[in-house]
Length: 298
Image 1 (tube, rainbow, N blue to C red):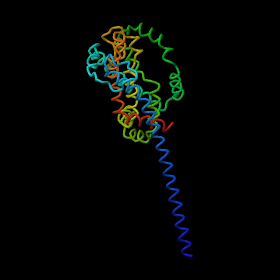
Image 2 (cartoon, rainbow, N blue to C red):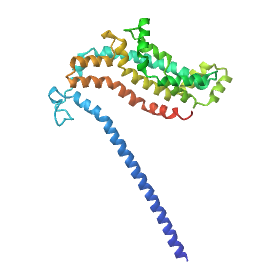
Image 3 (spheres, rainbow, N blue to C red):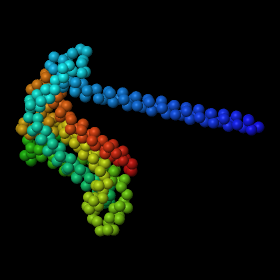
Image 4 (cartoon, one colour):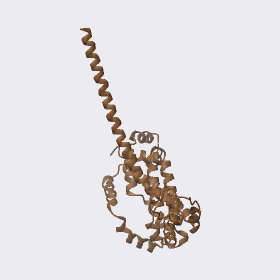
């Protein structure tokens, strides 16, 4: 009798072990498939950048080799100083940095103030105005481009940085929605406790809500940085003086002068894109956290 029970127990243990091994094997296959898919997607997306990097280090003779040569031989590091000296690259960079910093500061302050009002304050018609705000996101920029240009022209703002900076002081519908969703995840008890201690609404916003919203604010800052840094249409419409050009316009003028010298063009493009890559990799933790936590509470 005891031998029979021991055999059954051994069989049960063996079946449990096999079932556990099968589950582990299935999880391993699933993870392997996911990682392979991510690696293939990563290779697909990074290939154009690698090709641009390879082209920027080639000489004139090796640009159109068939089959293409991924590792240049010899490597032409001098393409970078040649490209940067062909246009006033430093001046264009400083112009772009100025516009970008102003836009980031203005967007964070204005959008967070409006988002705080929609998320934490109760006032008549709040939900209706929020729906109207979201409806403006459905309006393409091409529809308002001409009337906005006429308005700025009548104000005498053409060929200045005002059309490229002042609109950011009025907030953005998308960033207001993003921050509003994040602000709603912060417990109201914190605001109630601060009010009991005598804090005003602005002090609650400045001393409590903003410090707790660093991931969302970082996301807004990164989005704004990438949008303003790479903006081409805005500077093209409003800037006429070459001394006021941004990097995007500078690269366009470089292409018009040296359009056939693709190695120098790619070198200039990589230098222009480098700040965006650095900012994203340094801040990707806050970027991902901000996007993840934004939609937790509707």
